[in-house]
Length: 469
Image (cartoon, rainbow, N blue to C red):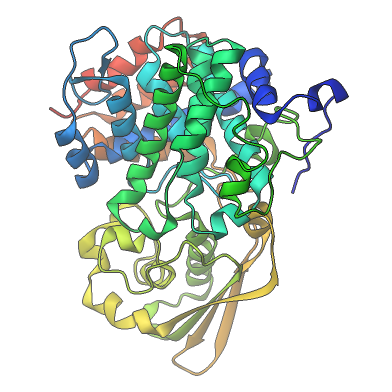
């Protein structure tokens, strides 16, 4: 795992909350970070739009009251005007409901979705560069706070995207809303008390709500701090956030922890998903599809399958016998069986009807998932560990296929063609009336985000291009 660089002694003398606030208020992300941020924003936005018509998002929409106030936010895919906190809940839920949003194995979480969802709900007439900088800073705070706690936080049962997402979203909103250092400290203190979310809800609608909650809590924390709400001077150290969220394993930032040196967006980078499901399934999917191509074998040729994961790698895979598309997002047996049967894994793989196919359901007991090797202490180490899929054929012979490099990581990133293809596929799902040419034009405009004087002109184009009623 990349070790944070040392910071000057004068900086380390500050409390964690003051150090975080100072970074949020004064940071100036360099050009490479801004470019990575634009890529992450586009990837997250298309996934958000793809999820906009899902049942969980529709249910959330039905609970929200329209607002005519001056702080109301216009929807990306409809004409409703919502309070910023409500818009953040809606955007966050939509961005995560398909589990297609990016991942940071540094903290075993989805960094972009809660931060971008919060920012879009408070953006107003915002220059693109300001939105990009706030995004880069918010995701950096999210990752460095999570890095300080290590894998222990996730292993305890917390959904790190929900907990860290509230902190990162508050940081991003504080920057975009131009809070001063004192207000920013209070926003972080408020967010620290709002953070929550359990892995036990994986495979249900509540998992995507976690991102909505995180985004909402970040917006709420920043707006309350701007209105004068005062939090604890130091909510992180001692018996604060770190101690509580790590089960007492740590109670402070590492003395040499640095923010933005380098940015996590660049090193180790965020991992943009090639497949719309839990990231711990991606290596086994990649291995299965590669073996199918190389061997020419299909599901009927295979008697038994064994998936060997690193220790801790099966933590999120809590549905060995899925009965819905949401369950299957966290099912290793389903992932390898569907890949073998269909020769692909895409959005259509995770419909209820695809999961409930009798042939697939009958073969679920034929897949064994085990963990092997040394216990790994950091999410980044789990992300780098190999995953092996062993296929026992009907003939009695066995063949193995291992994958070490994570699909979508900096070592195997999405190509520009794959990024555009993902964008087009997601917009077809979320905006069924839009034509591919119009969709591609929106993508091209989005790549110029840093040069936009006002992001609302671009964002409004999605509704105009064929949004849902």
